[in-house]
Image (cartoon, rainbow, N blue to C red; front, side, top):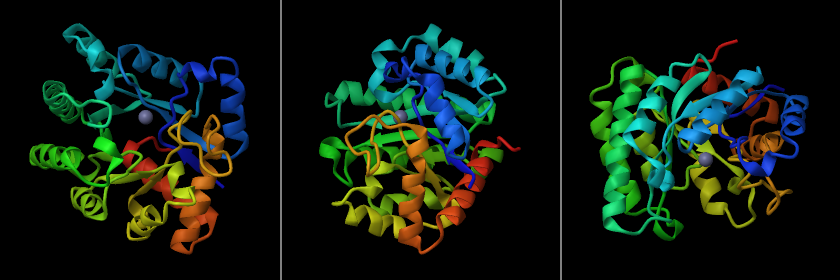
Length: 272
Ligand SMILES: [Zn+2]
């Protein structure tokens, strides 16, 4: 079985004591590719270092919407340099977070920085990893509305990236939002909550997503799937997400592993 984890924060201090073992366990569990996204300049640098020292690890660089107090023009210039590293496969994670950020001026700043990073991704021809979280974690609201309108405007200017613009990571929106993103050729990232007992509504949505557009991700160290819910998450647990999607789509876990690995290879162009 060939698994991928397209979103794991291996740079987090929660992995400081055993990072090498965590990566070794992932490899032993059949993971051939792991993608570490950046949150700001510091974590983007760390993601690149991890990618340099581990053959199966790749990086993304960018500014996360809840980490924008660290955004400076100089930091953005450094990100622009970092992105050319051969193991940087995407710009991210970038997006809108109206859960943690409630002030209108700060939300407006998130939108401005998101647009600039999208434009930048188009210039350098690398896909984007999108974070989107609604106020009160609802299925639909201002964040979905704003994100979709920004992305719809952005894709009009794409050329080669139009076929693989990016992924809506750890997707928690409604089916309509997913369908609008799919129509723009976005992929949908599925994380641990798909395994939670009370997640019937989420599983109903996932059942209606095309299998050639799904990615599996842990978002480690967060969102551990059942049977590790509440514990520290790690890339090796991604198979529990694949297993659940297999159950939902009436496929074998090996088929889901192979399909999602192919999807990730198409999106991130990381080949063999
Ligand atoms: Zn993340």
